[in-house]
Length: 178
Image (tube, rainbow, N blue to C red; front, side):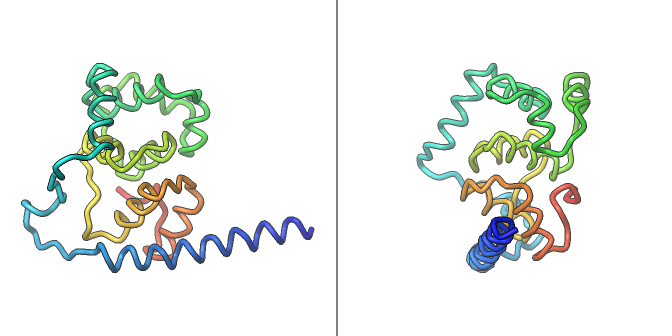
């Protein structure tokens, strides 16, 4: 019983620290974007970014997959994880991967795409590319997006912690994000 309470307190402490850090992250990065298509997706490119270069190279080395389905299937093939493990991490039925194989133009919700990014432990550039393939983006004008961005940038891939923080700040969980 003592060990269980210790683990529970440790998780509670970690989540409290996450919430404090995320609150600061949101205050620093939140931008009220006015219906300006030019600024909507924050696509300003930096001069050089090793993560972006590595992402571009990964795509080239895997046949330049274009659609969300093709990209996810390429990540599955490249990863050491089995399809069942990916589905378990994302909370999807095992038939979901078959759906991706059969529907090359499958259009996932933003939450589904983020779940895959977290399951594959993608960095921010890779996550942006995966989301773009699904016609989604992370903006600085959405608390949900900033929370997701924080988790990805900090390499915090716990979906339970992400759901906890999303629920605390936005009253939703990742699967609710459309």
